[in-house]
Length: 112
Length: 116
Image (cartoon, rainbow over all chains, first blue to last red; front, side, top):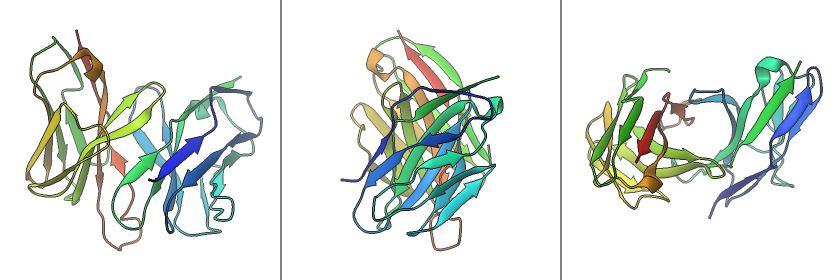
């Protein structure tokens, strides 16, 4: 079956540090890939997405590139802010249906 | 929350009692989902719906039932709540289809359920 693996958290960084959160997936065919973010006490929000190999999704300074050869979709940001503190979820949707599979989430804390 | 309302937002109940959580959408999206979120497990799919009266099980469906009698409403019922069902429950919707951006999930704010 389809699955998503994320790096274990929590991740603690100082403000303006570089962020990478690793995500790898297992799926048949060509899934669509997503990063969702969850701020404290809220539901998940779509951060960015990519629908085919070599696509780069970007939003709010975050980027992720769909790498089919390594089955990865790592999230990066060049300079994190305190306001980026949240839980980040990598997810996929297979192209045969409407089911989404989520990773376990990575908690990010950014210190001033 | 993009036209998704979950109710109640918080509920405390006792073991063995029935509980119903409601998800209401104003987006006229075809697909609706119920997930539960637990520490260490991320989000797990309970049930989903692909149309009125069309539902299917997810990976953790035992102890839960759902109904969708109208496009806008998707109900999750715990027939006899247990402490293992203490969790945060999220409803999500997806338009489906080929339109760009149609195949993303939009989430509600969540319903926190505590079973004593």
